[in-house]
Amino acid sequence: MPSSDNGIIVRTIVALPEAERAQLDALCRQRGLSRAEALRQECGER
Image (cartoon, rainbow, N blue to C red; front, top):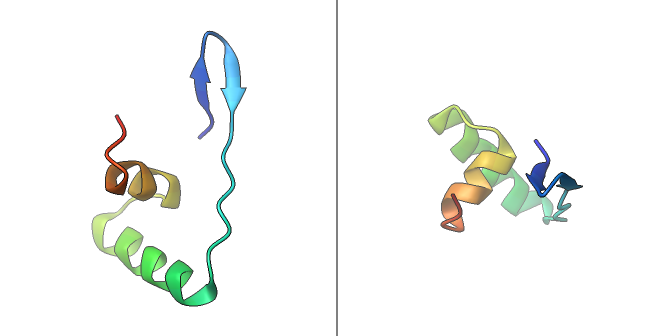
């Protein structure tokens, strides 16, 4: 989901190597999260 600050919609696209994307997908399945939410949690945002 895009984030919004003062009505401005912002999207971030992250290019990950296949191996890292597979690890992220496995983490998402385990936690029942989207890729975006998993990255936010891992980066300490929110």
